[in-house]
Image (cartoon, rainbow, N blue to C red):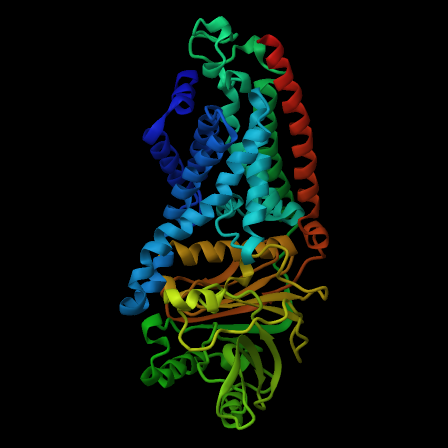
Length: 556
């Protein structure tokens, strides 16, 4: 193993870049829908060994960039599918989606490599340095420039309900920290060179051309030089963390029940409308009728709420009383229709649309709108063009049809509805943002309406659904998801899928609504405990690294 690690660390030039790109691509196999977690073990261990050979902070950042580039190219390829819905207009953007976006996102893994180098504690504990740096970079990716916390490494555990339960304590970022530490821990079995040895080629003793080191024939530190703590301690701690995660999950699930809200029955409609036909003027009525037919399938009389996906209703309800009454008349008495719909504001004459929102509207059986929610976290270039005046000259425009940018809503809110528990709606990818899915008024359930038809039959919709499940675990609140082409489903407060309809299937999901749990530790404190832990560990590692570097200099 020492020899293999030395090869990774010693890789040079283009071979090093290719190695890191491949390791990043292998890491993608650990993400949904494959969720082959051992792939991340290989990738993160190899990444650690490669960083061992980074002789400068900028070099470690460059190594991190190549790893991230491979990770994001292979993990986000499906974004290009959205541009294929209008090939003539958007085909030229495909290279940007496939290569430029991953290149930008890889700046965060470059930051992880850079920070890891600064905190790189010699010996086995360097695995902790990587975990701290990686978690900090993931958190920044989830927040800077509107944020894009997609495929955080903690999502590798979505194949196991038990492994996910620790998200109720520390959220997905805490799970990512543990994931990197645990899955990179085999690297601890090989003792890395010290930082002074990284620079050995430039520090020849007495001009003889040989560096003074205390290493074996492979160039790696010998066991007698291992700092206090040791390989066995780090690897054992990783095993304890892994076992503890599963043990906590099994105990928590052992107390779980299948309790549901009394008298609440849901019907989720998945009409499976292809994106290329969704906004065609001659198809709008047919698409609406498709939803109506599915909604009225047998059993409607027992339903409390019918849920349609994002923009399933292509006509604005504002000022359209006849449409509202017609839809309400189709509902059982006391039931509601919850649907994605464009909400508009017009000028004084009612002719020109002056503002538009991507919204959820709740309509009762009398045709009255009893609740609305406007999407707050908009998709750049999908729903609005950032810095539009500056980018107008380049020809960049949003992909969603319409000449207006969508306006942003005010953020998460809890809607009080007649005959239903209080609900917090989320439109599309708003559900991927940890700690930002509820307001201060805790709801009894989360409603996520979405249209993943843009991405076809690809990894994207599976990744999206997996991330939505984790929000339910974090908050201890069940989640109901209605998607145009799938995956629609009902997820309980433990992240367990109670009912679902697969990708590219047409039909309805009839389900009861699971009950919420008491507020979780994460729902109370969000990311603050993990942030405090990362800052504390970073400080300890920074001091420890400085001391270790001072000791190394004394050997020279």
